[in-house]
Amino acid sequence: QAQLVESGGGSVQAGGSLRLSCSAPRTYFRYCMGWFRQVPGKDREVVATIEVDGTSNYRDSVKGRFTISKDNAKNTLYLQMNSLKPEDTGQYFCAAERRGALTLWFGCGFGYWGQGTQVTVSS
Image (cartoon, rainbow, N blue to C red; front, side, top):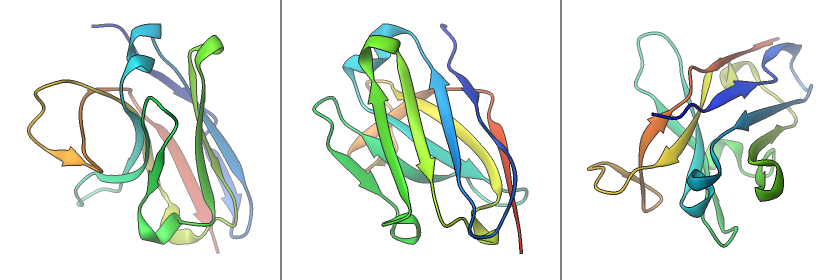
C-alpha cells in the first residue's frame, strides 16, 4: 500500500494559522481525498473532503476557517487552517478514497490513511 505522508502540524496559539500538507501517490488524486482528526478517547471525525472535480465539503465547526485544496501536479493535498481554536487540537490524518468502503463521509468512503500530524492549539 502506497503511503500518504502528512506534514505541517505544530503548536500555535488560538487565532493562529497552520497549513497541513499531504504527499500522496498520483493515483489517489483520481478519487476523493480528505482530512480527518482524532483526539484520544474519541472517534475519528471528518474535517473536510475534496472530490475529483474540486468540490469541497466541511464539517460545520470549521466552515469559513479551513480550506482544503490539492495540487495534482505536485501530488499534494493541503488543509489551510485559520482562526484556530483550542477545540481544533488533535491528530490530523490525510485520507484517500477506497472503493467499497462501508462508511461514507460526504459521499466518499476512505480506506487509505496517513500516519497523522499533531496540531495543538493553546488558549
